Structure formats: structure tokens, C-alpha cells
Length: 369
Image (cartoon, rainbow, N blue to C red; front, side, top):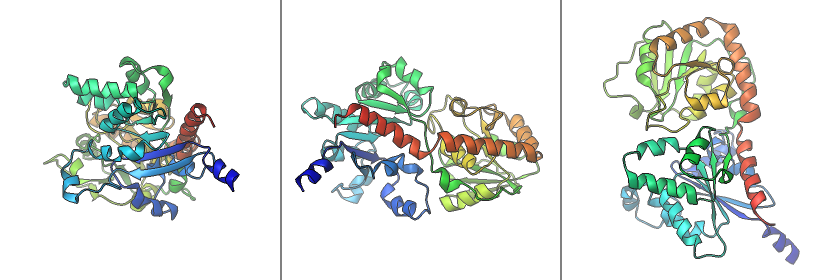
């Protein structure tokens, strides 16, 4: 009995802290295969390991405050209420909880046993652009990046940004975003489809360019998004159908029934969306075997080969987008070639299992068992 208890306590304790949408509500659906495991970012592949103890916590869990007070508190304040629990773990995997990161850094100065933060760098360049005109916020942001134990960046170009603000290279690791490729895999050949599909609910989408291009071609477009994404007063062409806030089952069905997927993104200079805005949708569409047309953002070039895995179009170019849609609509051979290449690339390189491998290797390399 004693040896069994001892063996259970040998491994490090790891906590995933999720910000935003509740993963607790998703867990049962993922286990029932009605939701993909993508949003857990490797937790589910790690939590069954015998050599470490792995848990997760939602940002709004275990906070004993009135609901009205939680609603009015600033977003960055909420994670601070988890400081005592966070400090009971050896490693924390989380993203943009900057005030909590500061609190952990201060607490670590007075503790022999440190809590080591693995910062998942979803927003690095975007955050710098947002705070470019506020020296204090920019200083606080870069100071946190220098203080966290390790940064797992999702896109290779982010490395240069981190180096430019003084983060040592040895405290960075490339961790490409992964998705639940099995959830989106199709067991039959895709149909020719009768519409162009565009999906996305972050503010990095460029619907002005998308709708302008749609107005130039005779094909039907289906756009799955949220009301907040559409600019006020935007004119929607008659060949565009808008679906608001549909669930992932519907999205998956749309991937299967579309002729192609078109992702139109704002330029690199935007402060909206994320560094890799559109990333999840493109990975899902490719995993489903779809041909993809996408705005030529730099993160795409670090993940995929233009012309082979997807069709790039210049940022903001209405004519180029309309021309690419027309060419791809009329070429079954090209659509199937892109779809086959995309499936192979995503299934080999961009699975959630890959994120778990990176995190496990970081922890095992550091932790003395």
C-alpha cells in the first residue's frame, strides 16, 4: 500500500487553466463524440498519464462571489482568484492571464517550490499592436513574457517577436496548434457541393472583401458567423446566406456539403482576432478534405504550402478572390488535389495529440522524477 501511494505522488502536478468558454460544459460532449477535443489543447491526451497528475480548471469555476460582481469585474482580474490553487501545482498551462502571471511570479520569489508557467502564445503580435501606444501596458506585457517559465508559441514568426522583446530562445518552444482531426474526417468522398462556405466568429474576418467578391460571381455562399462580426450597415448580396451562431455539428455538416471553404482575413496590421486568426477553421476544413481559399497571412505560410495545400489570395483583393473562387468552382481535379494534400498535412502535423507531446516533453525534460 505504501509503495502504491508513493508511486502515485512521484509525478509532477499539472494544471490547465482555460479562459473564456467553459470546457467543463464541453467535456461530456467530447466524451460522447458530439464535440471535438480541439479546445482542450492537449489536456485530454495528458490526463490519463501515470507519470504525472493532470487537471483542468475553467476561469469562472470555484469563485465564491456574487454573479453580478463577477460580471462587472475586468476579465484579467478573474483568474487572480485562482492563485491559491495555481500555486499548489508544479506546472500551469494557460494563455493571456497577465495579472495572474504577475502574481505567480511574485509568489514564486518567496517559495522554495515554484509553480512554472507554460504560456501558450495565442496572441503575441496582436497584443503588442494593441498596446503599442501605451508604454506601461507594453512594458507589463513584455515583462510577463520574460518572467514566465516557458512560452509555447503557435506560429514560427512569433519567435522573432519574442526574441525582439528580450525573451531568451531557450525558454521558447514551437507548439503548432492541433485539432481533433478524427471528428472532422469524412468516410466518403466529398460531394461536388452547391455553395462556397465561410466560417468564423472572431473579429479578424474580412466580410467586406468576402461579400464584395461574392457579388461578382454567380455561386451561392453560406457564411456561419456571429452578428457581432458583421460591420454595421454592410450590404449582403442576394447569393449569400448568413447562419448565426450554429453549433459544431452543423458546421461539420457544412464542411461536408460545401464545394470549397473560403476564409477571408484582415491584414497583418489588425489588432482584432489573433496572431493566427482563422487557424482552427482552416485546420478543420482541411481535415474534412475540403479545398481552401484563404487570405495570404504569414502564419498560413508557416503551416502550409501555398498552391499545394491551399489557394492564397492577397489581403483585401476582391478581384483575386472572385477569380480564385471561379477557377476552383470549375475544377474538380484541383479541388480534390487540394483536399487530399490538406488531409494528409493536417493529420500528420496538426493533431491535438501533437500539442500534448510538446507539453509532456517540456515537463519531463525539466522535472526530476
